[in-house]
Image (cartoon, rainbow, N blue to C red; front, top):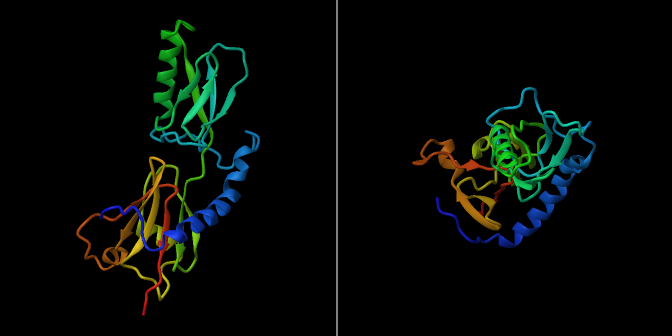
Length: 216
């Protein structure tokens, strides 16, 4: 299916995003709490394949240093600030990849002979998809931290399923790509009746799903 730059409910999108932002605010307000009471405590042990995203909180320490452990929130640009190196781009990397990157920079830039950086997660950023419109329980559906995508049928099911007046063959998905909003029209009905010729559409964190009403 091809992304469309706009669709007939374009005016609704801005209102939906304001609504979602308000709901999401309830989830992210605790992101600025003290590290001892994180909003989404990291499991022990953390998934080694998990890739860092904005608003994750990371513990930073260099073995042998007397300074206290540093806690850093990943910025919207996917960056954190660490001693001596300054800003480091970490978004999209695993913890181990980030450790290797920092150790190399500390060594190559002459700060340490054999640096050993230790990173861990203090908390994870909320990862949600908004499911709105003609579903029985419009909701912010949470992602598991182990998953980077979610099937659209699963998300709609978790939002209570379609109402009786839902237009299931033209579900809208809004997504931010490179700072711009794009939309997709998804025939969810074809997945339910197993007539789809392509794999199920996969949602990403922060997508907005809008189920329109059928026109009789």
